[in-house]
Length: 328
Image (cartoon, rainbow, N blue to C red; front, side, top):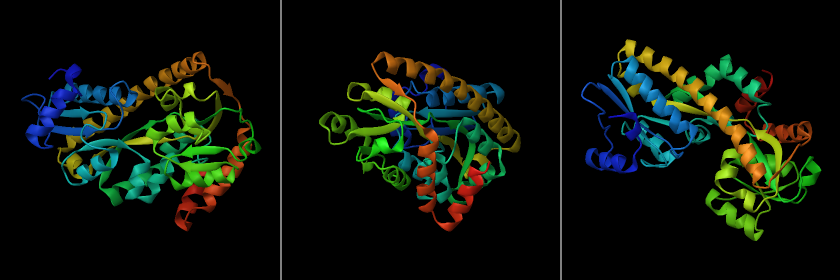
């Protein structure tokens, strides 16, 4: 099968129905075919990266290892895919904070005011703590991390400029249903309101909520520029996602193919990061052209208040890890 056909919804549907969640062979040489499902659409950098990963494996293993990629929740939502991998039905996915349903330490992947910037994220990824987080996830979930992708920082949008924490007083801010988000924004003086993402645009339009926070990619794709004037550069979450495979599925390959698999994953990470950086530049330009005003904030003040509140909300073991990460 040629790479351009991977992820075609019609073919994916036929494959899933006919083989009942078993992997579809890409060609007769494939000895190991892994099914990877994720939540992003086919234009997303994640999708382009995992297609690149499959092409690398095809070349480097002479077609023995391939990856079938299913975008846009074709084989289930994130939680459902994780359960399918653990049950041996699916094989791989792209995930992060959702893993905290099985492993508490996964919460660090998108915790507000934990990481200072991209350099801090890179330091964590290369550190013993980063290795410990991955090992703990493997032990508690049975999922092996093969690499990670950096996500765009989350920013606050609003219809009044927000430069310092006191500007938030009384502002109704939509947040995802994640405890640490509510804790942080409440400490900063806002009124956090958990809400499904699908409801946010209408709620902003009607004034049910007055602000929301997301990465540039989500702000753009959701057309929030139509109902929000200011994009306040809070960078309150510097986050990442893991690319994971069921450990049993990984170990089903002989050692020589496992080595190639992990090397290809590293190259995939570099490829995705280049795509990510290019996309981030374009997104800011597009949002400015749509009329959004970018506001610089007093980041240190937000960081001090938000970080303290999130830290105080954690259990003792999580607090120890939090401090170690902050010290990197």
